[in-house]
Image (cartoon, rainbow, N blue to C red; front, side, top):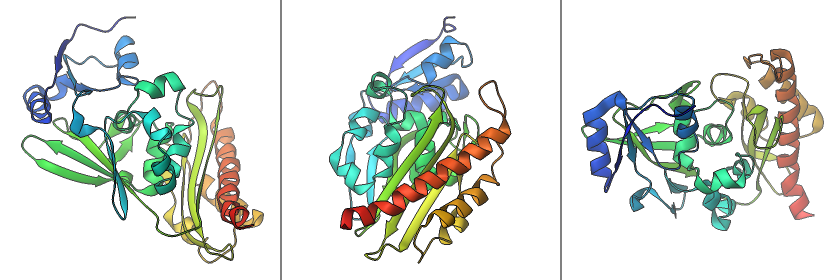
Length: 294
């Protein structure tokens, strides 16, 4: 199929883009990489009357590091982030998740903000943002700047808390201070790059004796939004992440999922897979500091 007719405007400034959103409301859609929106337009699942291109706005690109956070412009290419050595040290879960996103060709064009705004419940970047509780920065012409934790941003499949007249401008990722930080991302799909049947992500910080000091983890593809489990993560604090502990926590997390069924997998299999993947991720991340010290 082909997209329905639409008008196109390349914004020369963020202010111009916000003006267009304010004027056209729900009829306008932002585009930067187009790796999510364009296929939906081709299938006529999305029919914007106006595309507002923000791809060339320099203020929406790049990575800036502070003492406690990494601030990433919303239109920064996924591939650039995947290869950023400083980001791999500061926010290791994000590059780990990016390795599972689509293919190199799509990551060369796809943007961080585009994936988050698309809010596919099986996508990797929303899961990483929810696990680390990144902060999404939104701007509008009349409302100024608004900041939302990632865990409040994703509301339902393809639905976010962003308002019609808002543009996602940046994402702030917390940097975990100190040594012993490790992460893991696990996923199963029909083929690499396909939508995940289920996925699991975690970031863990251990002390010199291998006991967990801090933990965050979640599951993707098994509910309408990414799922995180801060209460279960607290159960890891002060403990070595053994196979028995990882299995117990992973099964408790999987029991809270609400997966659907389709031609690829039924709900029962997805729930089982979620427990298996989360157990693997916890063990990988929990053992990494010990391996590094050995």
